[in-house]
Image 1 (cartoon, rainbow, N blue to C red):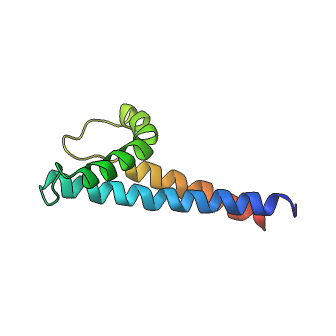
Image 2: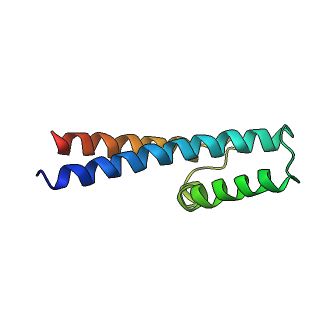
Length: 95
């Protein structure tokens, strides 16, 4: 069990970091949609591209199963719930 605990803690940390990346992608998409940020700026475009590449492989399969609600995307909420459940299970496994 002593060997597994560091691995579980690293997985927990990665899930936490991915949650923050997901929050950054959500905020970036809002700023982009409302025209707050300049999408023609190379730095802004590269940040958006990185966030898209990190989050889209997880969000796209979930979007296929969720009903179409127009402009409302609930897939990040499903991912956050999944991250929460996995982290709770990992915390139980460490005890």
